[in-house]
Structure formats: C-alpha cells, structure tokens
Length: 298
Image (cartoon, rainbow, N blue to C red; front, side, top):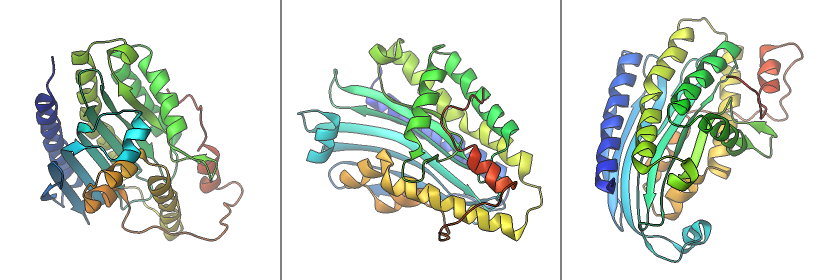
C-alpha cells in the first residue's frame, strides 16, 4: 500500500528535479523559494523564477495540506466527511519569447479515507503561435507515456484535456491541449495503486524533456514587436481561463491556500485589445483556427 507520506516525499523530489532542469534550460535565472504553512494544516514550498534568459516568470510549487474541507468543496466532491489530505506539484511557465509556448503541469493526490482517494493531474501547452510539428511532438511524447501504463489512457485523457481546457465564452481551447485526468483509482484506471502512482511520477518527469525540446526549437528565432503584442493578447486568454474555470484555483482559494502560490500561474503582463480580429492569411489567424477540440495531433 502506498502511504500519503511516500507520495508527498516523491513529489518533493520531482519538484527538485524540475527546478534544476529549468535553471539549466534558462542558463541565467535561479529559483527563489518560500516555505509556507497553511492555517488549518500543512504547507508547502513555493519556488518562483523570474526575468531569465528565456523564462520570464514561472513557478514550480509543492504542497501537502490537510484539515477540514469547506462546505462548498464537500458539496463539489459529494462527500460527507471533513478530514482531507492533498499533495501535489503544480507548474506554470511563461516565456519571454512569443514563439516559445506557455506550459502547465500538475500532478496531485487527494485522500479522505481508504475508499475516497485518487490521483489527478496532466500537462498541457498553450502556444502563442501554433506550430504543427511542435504539437505533434508534444502529443506523441504524451501518448508514449500513457501507452506505457494503459493503451486507453491517451485517448481518454486527451479528450478530457480538450474539454477541460476550453474557454467557453471565447469558444476556443486554451491551447493545443495535452492530457488531463482526475479521480484516478484502480477502478477508473484499470491498473493498481502502485502503477497509478508510477504513472503520476512519469507524467511529472516528462515535463523537463518536453519543455526543453519546445524551447530549444525556437529560443533563437527572431521575432517582431507585432508578435510580442500578440503574445500579450494570447496571455489574456490564459488569465481568463485560470480565473474563471480552473478547478485548482478554486480549490486553493476555498481551502484557504496561499494566495501568492495560487496566483503564480498568472503572467507578468497580459493585454486585452477591444474586439481584436486577426487579419486573413496571417499566422495569428492560423493559430486561432487550430484552437479547436478534437484535433488528432498524435
């Protein structure tokens, strides 16, 4: 049987590995760490990197919290008990280069008792400009991770990501998706607890090689001021999703989490241009045409 202490300890190791990998990738900036405690039980390690050679703002956060669930969360989870434990690693990276994508990853574990416990998480990419070869690489990598554990995972979790990372009021996906899963246990996964935990860790460890490849493909490409402005415009959609729809944001706020850690996912700058319309035949128009559900990138 896997204990919550083992899960939290392994997640901290993954946080360390990812921070080291991102510092090497950036080649300039380093993470700053803040240790925090949650009123009610638990705490975490917030690590933020800023103003780097390629990483303008990013966070790699670990938390392990426990205590009593607020009533809104209990209703959402459809549970009667109060006591909970939750641990995870959450990452968002905003690059300074408009041709390098935003990336998000989360791996997490939630427990109330032996019957109510599950893993969740996923990884998704939000390009400012969608490059089809990059999208294929990303999805093929994730498919390889999923297939290692269950041949059905990728199709299920890819559709889940398409549906979850959808900005309803804009009628567009947040990016090119990825995989997303929640409430994964032996019944819903078709594999045992140990295998589910190994899958969770492999998703976490896929972050650095995936993002290194995507960054290195474009970090030295020239870009224009127009492309920079488009980056700010696309960041605004990312902000809208995180503040309106993101379940992690809501859970953190409703369980009295640390505000700076919860909102570290927001970019340092985003623009809202009134009634913006992309010109026909441009890369911006092409990108918008690819922000759709159901594209078979793999």
